[in-house]
Image (cartoon, rainbow, N blue to C red; front, side, top):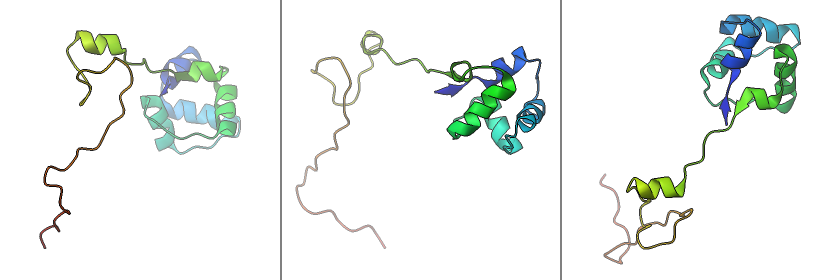
Length: 114
C-alpha cells in the first residue's frame, strides 16, 4: 500500500507537512514532523489503527482515501516483455517461489578468509 496523504490534504487546502501536522494535533494525534513528512512523500510508515482513525478525522476522509493500492504485476505482461523470474523457464505462468541454488561441489562450505 502506498500513502496518498498529499492528495487528500490538498482537498482540505493543506499544502505543507507542517499544516497537516497542525491538523493532526487538533484531533489529538501527535506524530513527529519526520513521520508526517514521510507520509507526505508516500514512503512506507507504520501507523497504528487508532492513529489512522485520528488521521481520517483530521482530514475528513476515509481510510480508502488515504491508502492507494499498488498495481499488481501482471504475469502476462512480464512474459510479453521477455522478462521471466529466475528458474521460471519451462514453467506455467504464475507466481514463482525462489529456490536456493544447489552446490556443484557437493562438499561442505569452506570457511571465510580470516
